[in-house]
Image (cartoon, rainbow, N blue to C red; front, side, top):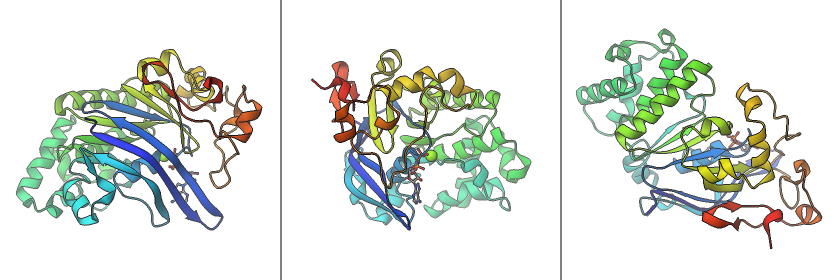
Length: 317
Ligand SMILES: Nc1ncnc2c1ncn2[C@@H]1O[C@H](COP(=O)(O)OP(=O)(O)O)[C@@H](O)[C@H]1O
Ligand SMILES: [Mg+2]
């Protein structure tokens, strides 16, 4: 049984300029111990997906359809109280995008780490022990508990955030661009840490990144998201050796430049506004193979051999 199953998830944001169709019919699953990488450029809906799973959506966000099944339970149907008590930060943890820069500057690391534990009824003494153990698991010393964020390097702050995510021994950790603000060396160290923690604590990951090359270091499966829709989904082996969607192919061919954080050189243009997405296939304005039908009709998600899925008219028979 999959640990996490997302079925047909659609999400909207209401804004003054209109309705943002941030996710449209997104489906995928993650088995126990597996890592799913979610890859796509900025604006493709990756963070929205992460926030939907842990239910930390902004006021203007709305889930308009879909189910999120975790460990057999439809967690969208749970009350907030039940979800907070047994799921968020307990069984499902998240490292939010940019979170290392949102540590509270006036609170010691200890106070920030134990707060969610104490809220769950754990005594302060036990919570401090749990937080200290978690810091040691991520390669920090317990004395970090008494430090303030400004006394730590970027890499250390990111380790603190990861320690907070794993301290309740979750089954699933959602990592939203966990290394994007870090230099290359620190990024490599954090990637190694994530690999070790996954082994040690038998974690499943949803690893979100705009960097397909980085994803290859952890991914068992890859979901390519484009403008709020699944472009391609399959085992990492298939996605890296036989990318089918022109967008995935473009991402692949720009890997060397992506790593240097340059603009995609092989896919001109950018992710469209999701208020008025392009007709038909949302990728057609940037696609070198666009045909008539691509402008008119949305492509279905086509299943190829080995459960490899691609939303592209090129593969329709
Ligand atoms: N709180 C919000 N209100 C309105 N629009 C939003 C909000 N958050 C994200 N969006 C829009 O939703 C789309 C997806 O954003 P996001 O999930 O952050 O993508 P990613 O993480 O892939 O960069 C973008 O068009 C973005 O502008
Ligand atoms: Mg994001």
